[in-house]
Amino acid sequence: MSAASTKPPSSPHVMTTYGRLPIALSHGHGCEVWDVNGKRYLDALGGIAVNTLGHAHPQLVAALSDQIGKLIHTSNYYHVPLQEELAAKLVELSGMSNVFFCSTGLEANEAALKMARKFGHSKGIARPEVVVYEKAFHGRSIATLSATGNAKIQVGFEPLLEGFVRVPINDIAALKQATANNPNVVAVFFEAIQGEGGINPMEASYLQQVRQLCDERDWLLMIDEVQCGMGRTGKWFAHQWAGIVPDVMPLAKGLGSGVPVGAVVAGPKAANIFAVGNHGTTFGGNPLAMRAGVETIRIMEQDGLVAHAAQVGEHLRAAFERELGTHPGLKEIRGKGLMIGIDLKVPCSELMGRAAEAGLLISVTADSVIRLVPPLIMSLAQADEVVAILVPLIRSLLAEKGLP
Image (cartoon, rainbow, N blue to C red; front, side):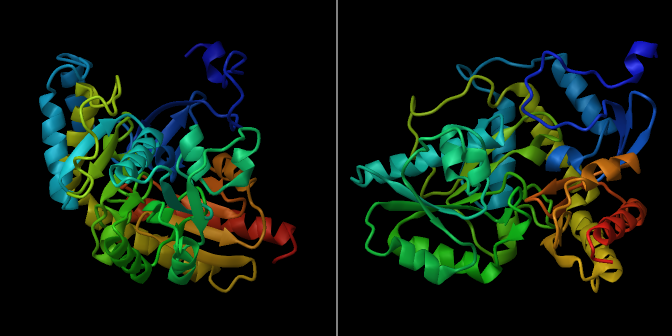
């Protein structure tokens, strides 16, 4: 390795849209990655819930190498057999009926919002409205940014798109009150577990109540599973803990184990909303992305990774509860499976850098929530290593802020 390659690049030509840590990663294996200086890190972030199978999974590497030697991209002017294969699998796992493929979670959510509007127009509603939630995050396009419940990231991009009704989570009375006597409402749209908003789960009873309300009022139930789906919570999709099925389900992140793949899965009520020419994408559903999705699910089933995520996630949560549960600086530990949020009573963004210095990759969201979304292959021993590194850092930070 040359001397020039042993320090992170300064990125003078890359737009400053991210506040980056001074780390440039070189390669990885499983749940471990190494930077250009040879330092090893335990990855408890998984590319922000993306790297389902970790890094350099031998079966995925072989499959993608094989596919690259055949076809990477053809366009949707032609049939793509791998689309049919992946769609059939997602339909089987979800209990839904049809799938549209794109490349990102933002695109999947944007497509869902378009479906809601077209659904409304088909019913003669000229100005359809969609119920969205406080603290939600659905993306950064103008439509998904408008649906998002974070004023900080909306500032500077006004005027926001109209047509949204915002309510708090887990409050069915508030939902009913906000939509009372409003004939323009056509859909309810939320994350089963809010990710960027601070790992805030929707309660099972609330999900069931919203499903019933959507049925009664002929609304679409649209559940964003971009971050919490694909086995992360110990079910294939987080809403399945409530025993319900949505009408529209955007997916992305973990579906391709690092290869960009997005999808909108639709049930019978929404499957035929889009007709030819209503929506499209150049890259969506390309053979390489579809092979990544097919192989990701195949390996997950082969290795029992959904149940494994539940087991390791419960182990992690129990360990953090044991180590921090009585600490005066802890507000709450939330989440399900390998989607865990440790909510502190003080802002803690500096923990990202301190954890990296200690050899652990994490993130902090909603100012005070430590987010852990590691690869689903993480072992119990690696989970213990996460706790051993992170707990002292949390205790030290809280002590600095007057919460010993």
